[in-house]
Image 1: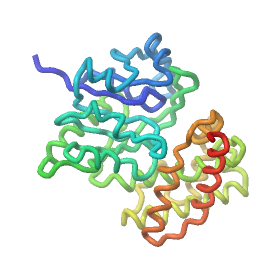
Image 2: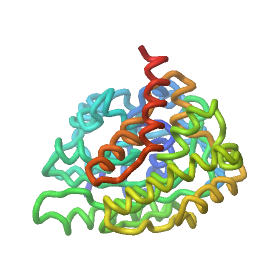
Image 3: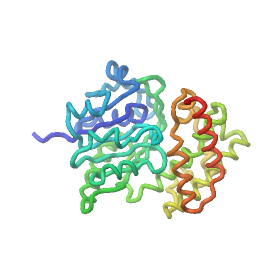
Length: 328
């Protein structure tokens, strides 16, 4: 009997838990998940999911592990590894954390936020197919193992690097997984050049995340409705638009009708339920923030390409000082 492809989701937080759940509903694959901070809760009771798109459900993963090494010891290398860890290159190397699960033929899908997140995987796994996946979704882990998801879920993926002569095979493999997502209600597209989509998402990520940290816990809607704060958001977004187009050489795809800073803040204001950024939640919990991939990496690209980004640099200085204040 032919074995079903095996998927290991590394990172059992909001993103990892939600998309592992959707994959697990398919009979065409086998899904396992690695959880850390919520391991006990997920192992014992699974995920309690409240989704505006999919309804209420309890998802009990077939296999829950505490480490990648434990998963590999029991199941061996995987066909797909989905990386849903926080991107904290100043704290740890995400590519090192998944290395044991990557064997010959493994496809690595990077579901992380930010800019430049694919590079550590491309360097460590030069012969593997590394896929950059951009997630357009509103999902939050309210308590360990308890997820609240909005009314929309979309994935945009593209092969970032692959061994010479293996692109057609990689594309077919990625198409298979994309089709599985679609079969379970997740919008999933494949793009030859995924970076415009990554920069599209960064318009919101690179502005609302750091600004929320310095705005004393404001929701995205509160920031977008305040005249002074909206101006700060839009000025930062304008820098991201210019920088992203300079780096990619392309216009952004306009997901959610976001085509300029003003349409971005209007989109934020239209969201009916208060949205709090992940960087804000991390700062409130005194955890490291994804400041490098959200701000530092884009700033380095701006310096390289000669693009002036004073707002991004100011925000990076402030959130770095805030984080150092509670981590030292």
